[in-house]
Image (tube, rainbow, N blue to C red; front, side, top):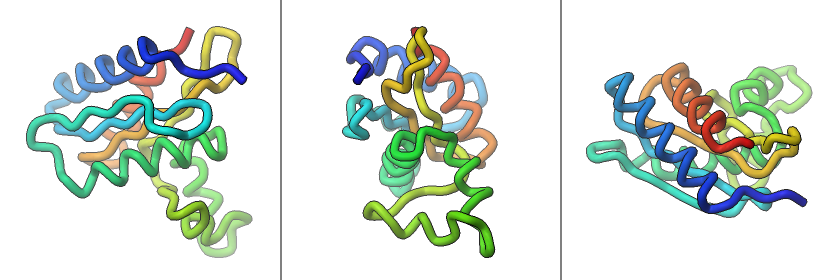
Length: 135
């Protein structure tokens, strides 16, 4: 199984922090490896304490299911095929801000989770981090 390197995880953090600063938001950013273990983390000055756990759970959720957490959210609504999935695996997050990270060959090597602003902002920052880490 391919795995994210420390350098790739640091690149993801740096890009996510840069995007956050560009957007004027304060984020907690977590990168997990292919096994969903924390590889790197950054808490921007002034970012919410409650978002530390959320960013980690978003990253794990994206890796556990190899899809964006917002996509899982659409499937986990009442009547949906994944209704109540957020109660599994010690707690998942099923709203935007978690994105799988792929290498140049398209293999998933980890994931990034971001929390601290709107879910739209969280997702944009996660996308920037994931793009910087790949390849």
